[in-house]
Image (cartoon, rainbow, N blue to C red; front, side):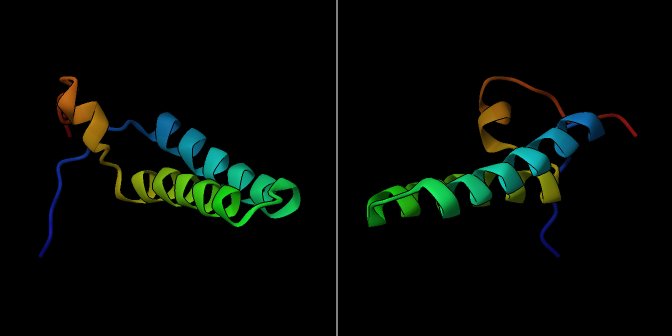
Length: 69
């Protein structure tokens, strides 16, 4: 099974999930070009994906350590 040690605390995960949803809604209503839609939905998917999994690769690159259980 694919396993990543979580490096995002629960409050940050909730914020990322809500930002992902808001980004998707804003993209659906405001994007006028296909490239704008692709960029908006990709950003929303990344935010929602990191919130669901609980692991952010960019945070790990800058030195955020896994959470203690």
